[in-house]
Amino acid sequence: MKEIKPDQSSSSSKKEQVEAMFDSIAPKYDFLNRFLSLGIDKGWRTKAMKALKPYQPKLILDVATGTGDLALEAVKVLNPDEIIGLDLSEQMLQVGRVKIKDAGLGSKISMVKGDSENLPFDNNKFDAITVAFGVRNFQNLEAGLKEMHRVLKVGGRVAILEFSKPSGFPFKQVFQFYFKNILPVWGNMLSKSSNAYTYLPESVQHFPEGQEFASILLACGYKDISVQPLTFGTCTLYLAGK
Image: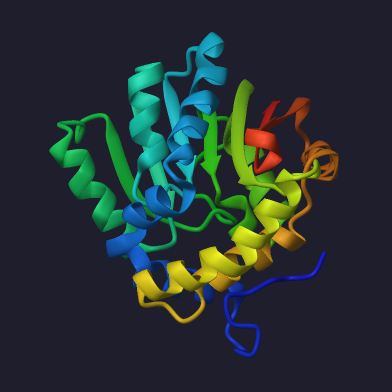
């Protein structure tokens, strides 16, 4: 699998580049998410959390939590005892901490800086692990998925949301035009980033999706894997157990 970095010409690692990129766009990240996805991303997060509801997880780890949108949605839908949000980007976490404080949820959600490929938690700790649009940014996909599997309890569940590419006419053509021509221009301009929203469609284009990603989950130790395309296949919800 080809490694796609925000800046292919740079010698720095993907991990370093992703951290710097998200640090730079953190102040406008939430606005751009809503604006560029037309608000559809909120519904995807709700659907992912509702999929975990039958399992009633009490302790949840939200990997690549960003500004905490999925963690906040988890509180609304699942009402767990505790959620830990983990991310590489300190600036994204700072934005998230303000949102959590404003929501009065500081006692329920904690935000920690950390690396998905070296999680600072004991084995078999979490009832559920969630990731929204983050696994695509892992430097080593399998290493990150294996670390998540390690800290997930036996019988626990993971819910992963990730962008995917629709295949049906005419949505495939509309999506490709928007993703390659409109989103990068508006995203880079509004975020004042030179490459963040150019990297996004490139990383989606090369990400192993659908059954290919399900096979990677299986190879990393997960079982009971399901693949659910959302919104004509522009996003996919992956569910798996340990």
